[in-house]
Each structure stands twice: as structure tokens, then as C-alpha cells.
Image 1 (cartoon, one colour):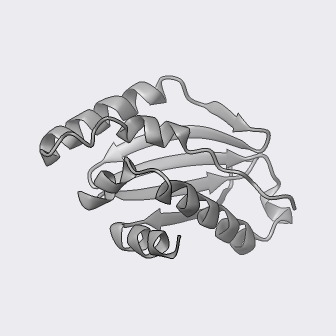
Image 2 (image 1 turned 90 degrees about the horizontal axis):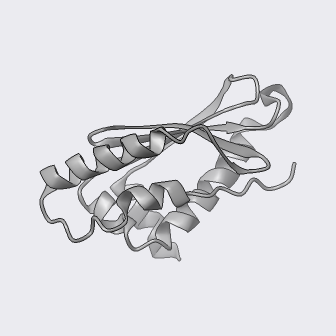
Length: 137
């Protein structure tokens, strides 16, 4: 199976320009407002293999749900999840604006479903995972 490239531009749009906010309550309010605006444009095709279906913010969790255009019965779920998680972490570590998100102890949960809407896998990115992954880069 070819590599699945993950584009987290939508997530970066949510967090961008929030790094000036030092107030966690204001941060939460702005994050929820921007997440809600983005949801109005979903679902959205990210690439030939991936759609973003929904986002949800319920502090401290920011949820993203994606659809992969695959038959979940024909892929190795663990292998696919590990490849995607690795790419997501690489992308996240390159975005300085996301540091504040994790500094405020927010958590990112990504869930992937297949073309038939069956859940393939989910994974959580916490401050600890973020820091450990970004140290390696």
C-alpha cells in the first residue's frame, strides 16, 4: 500500500495566531470558535486518499475524524496507523504554533474510518508524546 500523506493545514489554521494569548480561558474560547467555523466547510478532501470529516473541541481534547479511501478489511491497520502517526508527528513538530497547544496540556485525538465508515484506528497525541517525538527531530 502506498504511503498516505496527512495534511494538517486545518489544524494549524485553528491554532495559528493564538500563541499571543497567555490566558487559557481565552485560548479555549478562540480554539472552540475557530474549530466551529472550520466544521462548516467539512467534509473536505485533503488528498486522493484522505477526507477530513469533522472536528470537535471539548477541552482538553481536540478531535479530528478522517476518512481513508480504503477497504479496512484489506489493510494492515497497525502498520497503516503507525505510518500515519509518524507522519502526523513529523508535521506537528515542524509547526511552532502548536507548541502552545500542547503547553496548555491540550490533547489531540485523531480517528480514521475506512471508505465504508468502519473505524480503522484512533490515536492520541499528548504533551508528553509531542515532546518526546519532537526531541528526536
